[in-house]
Length: 278
Image (cartoon, rainbow, N blue to C red; front, side):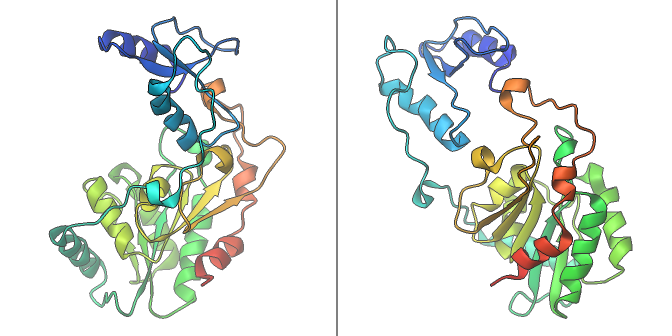
């Protein structure tokens, strides 16, 4: 279902919809995707993805004869256009109890909660900050204050990542919740309790921006210029190596790189400084 996959184009056609909107490659390199679309929109590699997606919607009010679409300015999304998540009371109680189970002395009025998402996911593991760095980060955040808690987040299949970090810090103030958030609502509710989320580039960073939590995102193989989460509380760390970004929608997000030095160049000290800065 990537932006320029043939499957998404065929599925759009098979939907039977009278208006079929999508990105079209025109004279660009890459796969020919047929002419199934009624509204062919230019994908702009110099524009944030939120603007590209808005261009798909805005194309509905354009004359389809006037290609390529959309021939007018699409302003960047403003903060008041973002979705906000307000968890219901039952969810808040559920997550509070889960935190209390992990650390019996948990008190939101006393403790600072730092959430670490160490896994970049299966789709693009090259986006992952080294697990060893996450272990050092957890220790540094715990050392920075006696009331600091570190919560580890992720899917159950990467629980070994949490076990590694727990063993590294050997502290009861490190709570391993990997595999214990049952759905997106629970994950975002957890964010609403947190003071900061530290994560590689990926979905959790964007979901967290639906809350007031500080979001620290580590970019490397992809560019924050196109994919940074929206929000005043988002802080991006990115080393602009000459080879970065090496994955994008026009190369099917494939890279020959097996050593993401662009991410390894982001030090634990840099991350700690951003996280703890008031």
